Length: 109
Image 1 (cartoon, rainbow, N blue to C red):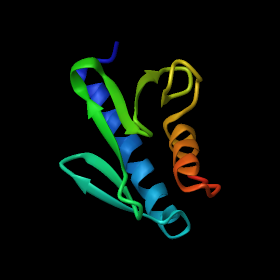
Image 2: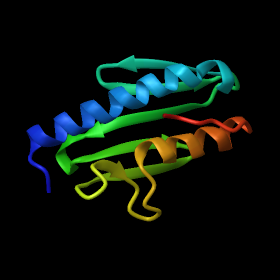
Image 3: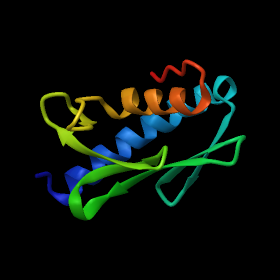
Image 4: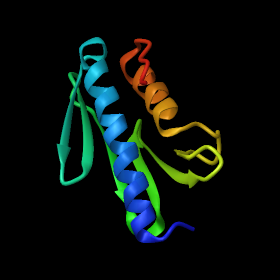
């Protein structure tokens, strides 16, 4: 398990990259990105919201989306946060969830 400082560094970097990707995809996705105290919120025109949160006590990034909580762990081999059940990275999982929500193909880089 990562120590807290390493987790914070990896989580901050991963969420910053996700934020930039989300900003780039906002126009095509009919959603708006907001950041509050290190938490990313993606708000859709239909009134729903996805929440991306670093959870330091358990060293995970949590995504609340589509009435489900997704908990991503740091993977040293991939050098990314991944969903253990599918092996999807934070960006890949986020793109899939956004595409499901909007009905549009969303690509995050």
